[in-house]
Image (cartoon, rainbow, N blue to C red):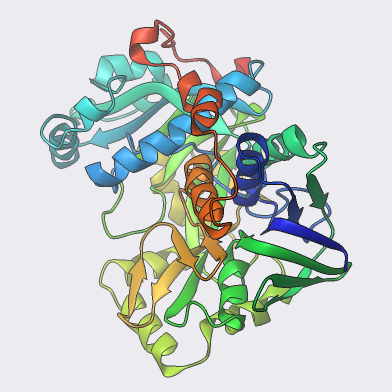
Length: 461
């Protein structure tokens, strides 16, 4: 036996790393192991090239309901508080202005309703409704070259956190890996998890581990493992690969979103400066359905079919979802964006909606950027389940966390820690006050006098 533990966490991305940090620092659980198949922590979906680098609060995400925004806001404030306390020099994040932009009478009316009547202005005290002149002061390239007769409105906030989630995950692990009761195994792929009457036996390339309780935080592979253990019978995945275009000019000072289509579970097209290079502006994401669980890894195609199941319910669910009159045109249109020469010409209008003066020769496909986000499919109801997915079994949790899983990683870790302690039958305690003091209590409030009076230019980070 390689090792015996109270808790084994499978997966070293932002989800698994945040749980390790929370359990190790704020409970008295005696033995914890994190097992990661890659040689490095957060090498796949949490790597900074494989996601939009956005900390989602729900303020400018116009597909969020007020109820969802309330939940996401608290989770995002935990991460922001952790960053404020642990990354004062902003080496793994930057803080810039962000806004959602409405252009034209219909969009402006929709955004005004959202801010005033729908309650988002009350929920987010730092969020302000600003017009053309104020937009131009913060983001001049958003206004330059735009039709002056077009009405404009933006909801803007200084809480625009651009985050290297891979480095945040590494920070979580680094904080606790030297504790005597913590073991971190990288380059150790899990081959199977076997449930016995008293424990879980985790088979890896390096040998066997045992644990009283297990949390699988392996992205898309979480559902694959769950299904081998008899869980998630009525769930499948719609893996969506995101990509970006880029301009090698500092076009934007912060993050600028466009309005989200309500029925799409993907991020609205936006422009923002890359977290480690303020002169590189990314536009996207594009999104296409791919039969793989990891971007660019053909070895994960069979893994997808393990999850898909090749059964009538899965095929009928895909057919029902992709036949949607909003989703189908979106999927087909996004396929065009990958076609050489044609793709960037087709995507250019989306870029120009953010920065009107951008020309075709100014943008290129961003090579090496983009990951796979698993959207959960309910094969019983033949529908997409928007948001995060969690399967809770007997002393085991499976987390499949599409966006905004990274933004709410600490909130998810708090809940999973509470559940893990229940699994361990009350033998241990959770210092929730200490957890909040280290995270959400460090988030700068409007009445703290710490709101940035000016947007931080991207090239200053």
